[in-house]
Every structure is written in C-alpha cells, then in structure tokens.
Length: 353
Image (cartoon, rainbow, N blue to C red):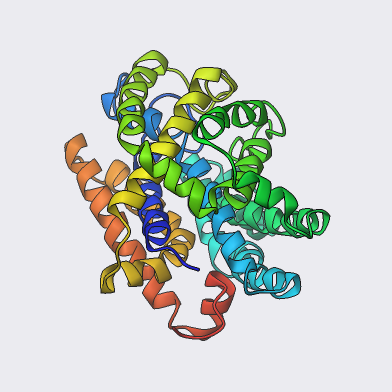
C-alpha cells in the first residue's frame, strides 16, 4: 500500500533536515546547540523561521500515515518488533557504538570538555550524542501507544469515521494542533514536543491515510500553496530576531495556523507533482532514514572546521557546508551499512539491502 509521493516527500523532508541543520548550527538568534552566528544580524536565518514550525510536524504526520499502511499487513507483534529494531536499537545501542562521537563534538565545540572528569566522559558523551535521534525515540514511543489505541478501536469505527472528514474539517484540524502545541513540552530539551508531535502522528494515521482525504487535500493544493508562501513570509518577518524555538513562537495561534497551512499545501502539491518513481527515488526512499541517523556528525565536523579553521567568506562557508553535508552523509551511510555490526547497531538493519 506504499504511495510514491509519500515516499518521495519523506526523503525530501530528510534532505531539508540536513540543510536546516547547517543553518541552525550557525544561527544567530540564541537557539541552543549551535556554534553561534557570524554577524549580529543574519538574514540567512530567515530560512530557519520559514521551515522550523512545520517540517518535523510533517515528518510525524507522514510517519502516522506509514504506520497505518504497515499495519494493514502486519500483526501488532510484528509491527512492534520491526519498529523496535528500526527505531529503538539505533537510538539506544547506536548511541553507545557510534553517536557518542556526536556527543564528543558537541562538548568540544561548546567548550565543556575540560570540565568533565575523565572517568565519566564516555557516559556524558553518550548522553550528549542523542542529537537528532530524539525523533526516532519519539516514533518508537508513539508506535507503542498506537498499538494500545488500536485495541480500543479494534473494529476501526473511529478510523472509518475520520475518513469522512470534509475540506472544512481538514482545515479546522489546525485547532487540535494548536491545542496540542500548548502541552507536554519539555522545558529544556525543546525538541521533545510530545503533544503536537503525537497529535500529528495520530492525524496521519486516522485521517490522512485515507485516499479520500488525500484527494480533498490535493484539490486545494494551489490556494493552500499561495497562502503558505504568503504566511511564511509574513511569519518570518514578524518573528525575525526572536528565538524561533521558544514558547512565544511555538505556542501562538498564528504559528500553528501557518504550520497547518504548510502541511496541507505540501501534501497536496506532493500528491500532484511527486507521485512517480525512478532508480534515484527508490534509492533515496530506502536510504533516507539511515542518512538521517548518521548526518549530524557530518554537520558538526564540517561546520566546526569551516567556522573555526578557515577564514572563508560567510557565503562560501554556507555553500560548502550544505554541499558537503548533503554529499558526505549518504557516503557515511553507505560505509556503515556495509559493516555488519554497525549496520545493526547504528542503522537498525539486519542485513545488507
């Protein structure tokens, strides 16, 4: 029950994550985890404001849709087993085997290495190496919760009801998204936004996995695209200079209307323009998850070298960093997937493709 446009949208969203992380690393607006900006005002940070509200919500919604398709030909036990190998192994054992190096770079770049007693450096590096793995940790948790919810809706009555959502209701789903944005947010680790991401995941499963709903979204893709672009520009201008990952931005009604408009526009446009396959799209569909898992060590390595070891013009640093991350992350993935132990621990893959 795979849909080509969903697969294409997923791997393109992963590429967007890679590019986003380059700009995030150099952000000049105080978002934690970066290396700092180059100037007091950085207009290139506009990309962060335009993308941040919706791109991870989109990935969780797509994951909910994919979970529905997966469960049409898997038992609950098979689904949890598959998700555990694919999601939990890389985000736990993978930390011990590989991602601790991300932690090392995070600590060194942040200047905290000498403050950590040698005896506890490895566990601290492991903890600090989580990075983008938060996404797959949450996906695993949501998969478990989904199985429990399915047992309450074992006859699919609620699922069938959700398939009847008309265009008006689809548009108004921004309201539960907004409500969910207010709750279950971690105070320091702001990426762990359990409320909004879980609701997006459930909407993907119960609502957007229906072909009828996808058709309704496709019919409004052009007006939604125009509204998305206008709102994105105005949103960026309004919040520019503020911490875009702070509650003041993320919890506002405007932010959540904007992100919902973006998601509907992107889903509709993807169904219209991305519903095709080729050798390249098939490769990226199979590889994008692994590329996501390994990319952050490339981001930190390349960006720290360019920022602290060269005197290149700022625009050259951005261009080289983006190209290097987009090219070297798949290369690193290809190397790791050919090493049996690392293939399982880091990528959650049992055998070579």
